[in-house]
Amino acid sequence: MSLSLAEENYLKAIYHLSEDGSKDVLTNALADSLSTKAASVTDMIKKLSAKSLISYKKYYGVNVTAKGKSQALQVIRKHRLWETFLVQKLDFTWDEVHEIAEQLEHIKSPRLIEKLDKFLDYPTVDPHGDPIPNGNGKIVIKPQVPLDQIEEGYKGTIVAVKDSDSAFLKYLEKIGAKPGKKIQVISKEAYDESMEVIVDNQKVFISKEVSKNILVTE
Amino acid sequence: MSLSLAEENYLKAIYHLSEDGSKDVLTNALADSLSTKAASVTDMIKKLSAKSLISYKKYYGVNVTAKGKSQALQVIRKHRLWETFLVQKLDFTWDEVHEIAEQLEHIKSPRLIEKLDKFLDYPTVDPHGDPIPNGNGKIVIKPQVPLDQIEEGYKGTIVAVKDSDSAFLKYLEKIGAKPGKKIQVISKEAYDESMEVIVDNQKVFISKEVSKNILVTE
DNA sequence: ATATTTTTTTAGGCGAGTCTAAATTTCTAG
DNA sequence: CTAGAAATTTAGACTCGCCTAAAAAAATAT
Image 1 (cartoon, rainbow over the protein chains, first blue to last red):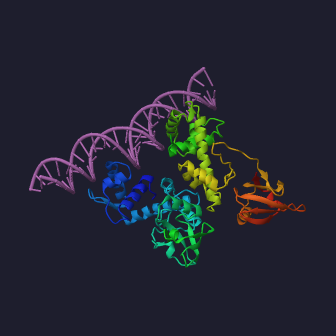
Image 2 (cartoon, rainbow over the protein chains, first blue to last red; image 1 turned 90 degrees about the vertical axis):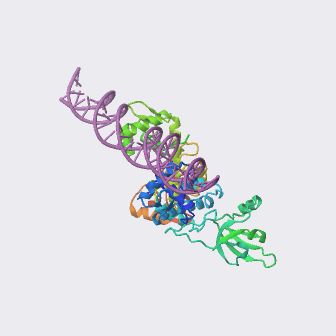
Image 3 (cartoon, helix red, strand yellow; image 1 turned 180 degrees about the vertical axis):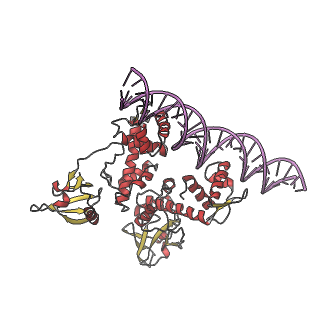
């Protein structure tokens, strides 16, 4: 049975505020997070509870059930795949995509998501570096390593950027090194630890100064 | 002021049923088209009329105003751009995309549509051969010509297919000749009027039998 | 030209999701 | 340990978009 837009948003908020299900969420916290009032939250909580999507003890907060968690993860999966699409294919920057993905995540079509996933070449992280749950709703967290510690011949995905200096971000923009992009190390210079890499279908030389601030994953 | 999902759907239905604004739409026709009841239609008609999106004369039907037409065309533009995306980028077939585009057309973000349009290389027709209104809500209808009447060196877009024989559609599928795809005529053989074309980044030879059933536009 | 049928509108009501105000429960300070 | 503060729930109401049933208007058929 398919969930309404509001139900999906509540489920997602509960999942996130509970830190992936590890602690209970209080009514007011949920109200703040969803920009609504406590009374409205109590109403919806009862509905989700009646559907066994969350467990609810009056006055003591809520958390997702296994069923609710799985639904929440599907929505999160869609959100992060769409964000990846927006950045990698439509050239949005990572800070512009959240709002739009909040809408796109509610589109109902399993085949659409399968095909989008394939089109994006099965990404494992979104443009913010957050992991994308797989089709079974499992989050596979791969270790994130600074690029300077990577050996020649390695192929991986840019996950995040350490330095948020605006000149640095502009430089990354220029060479097409966005989080989520595939990257391949062609060669490493022993002398100054600079390296030659392929990003965005282009060969680029980068200094150690740069490579140590780029986090990648297998 | 932004329209609700229901309002957008009513506006679109009125626009289509009125044949692009050229005749009035009756309450029952609208009810049938939207799978709802006449009483519900009358309710919504009053709301849209109060917002000056449609003109309404009791018992005599409705039609879009200039303002309503412009809104309807924006929704239609989004619908057709998304259909084009689904077919050309995600490899859906043209008969699978309507349902999904019905959802996607309501996503609110002018920048998203601009960027999607660019990503698709500013298509003028969707995978069903219907014209895509431009950003100003203007429909530019370009003449559609059978491919066999096209000269060497011509570049254009496949708009539609005349023959709907399943074997023929399979053949087109195989060579990547979907409506919406760019096509270029390399050479024409005077003897049997076969031609060499580039579709989907591949050179293909096609017979006159085939080329006369493919409609293209400049 | 009037009676019957068809279409449209009005009236009243329902569920989803929200709100405010009041009541209840839990927390916390002294 | 108890009174006041804070958090939560309940009660009642609102809008949106839909419904059914009944009333009203328009179309039609004799």
